[in-house]
Image (cartoon, rainbow, N blue to C red):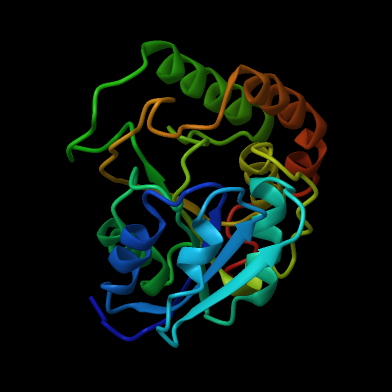
Length: 242
């Protein structure tokens, strides 16, 4: 695999003082990372102060004066990204940035326009946690697959890497966790070539800072329905990449 820096990594951060610097260090350790755009979404803890100490020239910190949600933070970060590929990484330690190398392979080979990192098809280590969260994720993926006529295994995964030119064709409307079904519907609607690769996962508990909740699950169902029209507009496989 090429070690040429070519991936812009967008990191939304809200109250992640306990992990944000370690998370950034792990991303910066990857030789293929061109830049890291951290969007501090009006954190109320020391996240902003810690980010102010980062001097690496690859890191750009953007601050929201008011908390707007993960989708809004990604919208801000995507607009600032300059690399030919743009990926998402959380400021916690649930995902291993070394796995991003796997997501780049189908892109580098010209096979994919977007690659998802699946927590459910992987032979890698995965922390055992909440059964009903797993059921919820699979249910939402199933609904999304029906709406988009795709067969992915993990629509709700954080790890997604896009070709820059694909992202440029998408307007993100959701401000919170509805981003996941929205972006999936819209890339499918553009006829993007979607690939999945297995990744490791070290989920955290609510005591450790997990933020997504049952209300976000209901919003995800709403978004699957809302954006299903986007998925049905074209959905001609290979349209973006050809």
